[in-house]
Length: 396
Figure: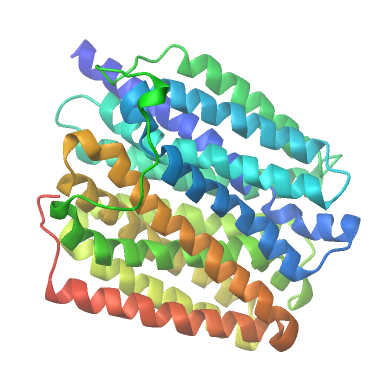
């Protein structure tokens, strides 16, 4: 019994470290309007600054996404915390636009190191037989941390001094505490190899994973794309179209999407993986429709509903996708397969967001958003239709 308690305590502590790192990646979200005022750049530049993060994630996942399988989970997570701290320092030193690019790129490197390694680490620290709960801890730490970032930064920017500095000072303190926690946790990789044995890998998948991976990855792509639009352009939409200048409210709206995702993940345990993927696709489709209404009629209530409904749908699809892909992957390729899923998911954060930014100039923010919504609706509808014809195994 003591071993079980210790295992869950270590699992939750690793999840908390995961959440701290992910909070750092969304910390600048409600601050972008302030940076626009300070440096005088366009809405398109905001989306590029935001998307640089995703390129950092994808690059790391493709180059060393399987590193923790070889050198160990804990050392890779420690490196991730180091890059997270370096990102915060870049934002603290920001005197021109280049510092923001550097900060976002380092943040992406941090998240890239964390996604596969920390997800596998949290799941492996859990006691035997606790895979389902451990999957929830990992995915909730991921999405919960992403939600805490804009909420923390928005509240501090609105109600405390030094809005462009204090959030990153607080994050550096949390990173230091996370390092102290991580040094007390055990390593879970038994047979470790030197770093030189790690080789870059493409997005190839073992044969037994491919049938599950396609629809699961498509749904994850759309869910992350929805979050990408929320976190990159929703502060500007709230300020320009709705006259909402409160940074705390802006951060809260973004945070609601991530918190709703955590709720959707929790519901997977009751609904089951087989039904969660198509239901999550339906939630994403409804969230996209609500976002279209919000853009067309300039209604804050529809923005909030879109965050809640779309976030819940993303949570259902993401946890079910992670569980089904993880269940189908061989044990020695676990982190590598998870990293490949995250490559597709983070592509959803980068490519569509830049497209929205590029279209904002010629057709406006509302028009660009509606084009994005139409494209994502086609994708998620296709994934849902496939999953209804060929559902994933329930034992995942």
